[in-house]
Length: 222
Image 1: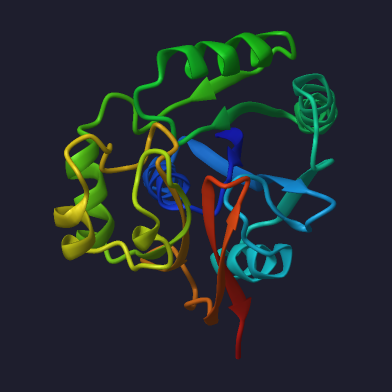
Image 2: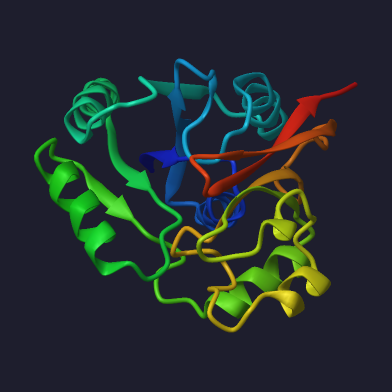
């Protein structure tokens, strides 16, 4: 059985990728790996509080490994910190990293090239899947997710803080990828078939950062 670590953003693509790999008896998930911006104590890009991330991962029943970066981290800082963590898992017998990437060729090549320097490989179970069908499968599989960040240069800010369901998908403009693969939006999954229990939260304030990114703050509850 091959040990893998999951690149975990807390969002829907990570959740579906994890769901897929758990069906394969050839793999054993060692941990979920999340990049956290230390200054904000939140998941990088997604803006979800670390405390909520920890509850989410506990509800999934896996260890959580955090890669800490500063708020203005350079790519060099990110790569150095990520490399240290992955090297630790490589030494423990983990040979692969699971990603929820769908079609960005340059991003996949970047990941594979970096992993190769560590003697590791990437696994991409969602690769080249139709993104609209993939987004719809979130609901059909029983996952529940809410948008936490919207890039208002590509998608209206009204889409932040909304549940991802059929209505949400039907209202997305044709120019926007259904899964937000180009960074149009990010999400937080709080329930589904691989969860031991749902993750309770309440919706906090919505703020605009950098005059571009609209974030919906999720507050741990229960």
